[in-house]
Length: 129
Length: 134
Image (cartoon, rainbow over all chains, first blue to last red; front, side):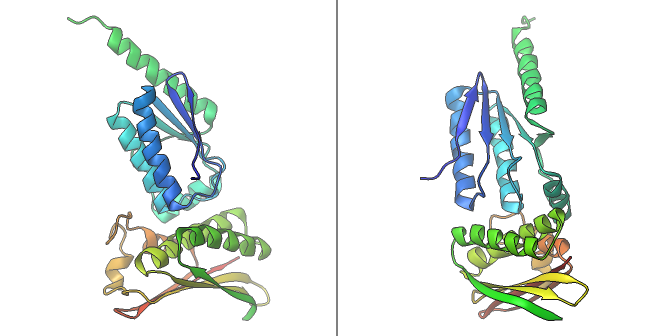
């Protein structure tokens, strides 16, 4: 079956969507990513959509769902690399990508996830009073 | 207004939705659309094609490359013979959905094109016609 690869770098999962996804493929990614977060004990998910030529309401919903599911599993999601034409279209379509954190590129997205992860670590290290 | 070329393609499966998006992209490039206009038209296509497949039980889309002499455009006519839409005004409202979608399909698609026309008869099907001008 066709699927989108999920890579792991330390405690961060990386997904690069490089194909024109049909709806079922997007749903498969949502399921696999959620399972992978638990299996890999990931604290961050980075989704690179720089190759995506459109984000319609279906893909938008899948991205929102992934972010919401990841949050419940104690992981942060950041969507990076949105093309300007996609951003313009998304806003006119009326899609707000509720709950989805975005960053301009992979580098900035990784920096955000690393910072979030470090902050989380410090909170856990703090002695109980 | 002259129709430069016309083609009707089937919309039965999810794979057809992807194929139609790609076909519309090619036609939009041939008509000289900017990247933003291509993206808007293809996004509207994706929303309407999904409606045809998911809610209309499948159908067709007719593509027409148009010219008025000074302007170039693309017209897409989505036709299904599904259950139809009883209340079009309600269906056009953002946030209204009978399925699992976000309810942005029809209203959102309308905002992304220049002309939008919908007719639907309960029990007979739905026809949505959109036009985007360069």
